[in-house]
Image (cartoon, rainbow, N blue to C red; front, side, top):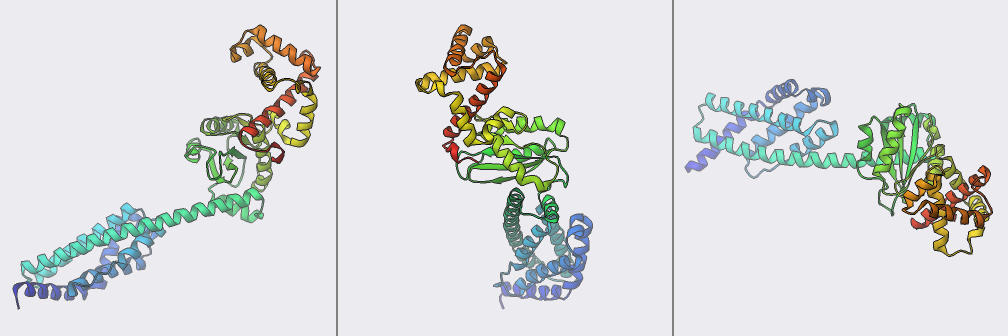
Length: 406
């Protein structure tokens, strides 16, 4: 027998003796891991951990008995199970290091006790290091695969629960279960958010909106539909947080946004969604956030599209014979005048024209519509018609048919 064969035979004999103490070794390592890595004691049953250590131990030393044996199943199982149990990967690596130090000490003690030749001990240690390195690679790959699958599953579950809440398909007990899964409190106030998307599969709000709101103590859950991105947000301090929410939505939106009024019971989510969609129709420009009940004129203009369209047509009928560009100029000027509390000077600054130009255009609007801006009722009628028209233009810009909006 050659020298290398003698070394291999010695390593195999050493491995056989090590395997005799598998149970003892597994118990010692498991206890040590639980002591040094507390998350294991909290999340991994002791018998499960001992079985995992024993499986690794047997595969390691079986490999010294049969060099052709390559078995990574224990590492694959460990990676998947620890991910499922919520053990951080850093803790799993720490546990492997603890097991490695025990194996090394166990091997060194056995070699010294049995007077194993140094070359035999080195050969055994080299093979163990190689296999242990392979174990950690397999474990980390399996851990990441399992974690990714669980994240996808959790996202899909959250999405389905939000959809069921929005559609009002959950019974009261199921509503509380859904709140727990979505990490929402059982009690409001809440709001529903509807943000227009540019196209199917695209987002209406910038990435990270949920995390950004969470930093403001606003918990939220989101669902992407083909035409809007829907959010359900908890506002435990609405007096402080509603304006914070509106600012975040205005900053983070890529289109128009509607927000429902506050409501206290999650069973009212589907009704709140309907009101958020109405508010969305009242948002006339990208980045505009309309809260149902705050901007009453915009919401009223959007709440009954067919009726409002007829009403607006009747009020503004005197503008129909005008060229489209001239008609738009008169309405834009009236909108600027409204936005600046009826000040021609402020409207002029907004439009970059002379105040007399604003006054001239407003007089033409009065002549064409038969309404005067000194009469509050006439101003109210024109304001409503203006909001309807502005909403119609916004919907057309989005590529929507205003008549189809409900």
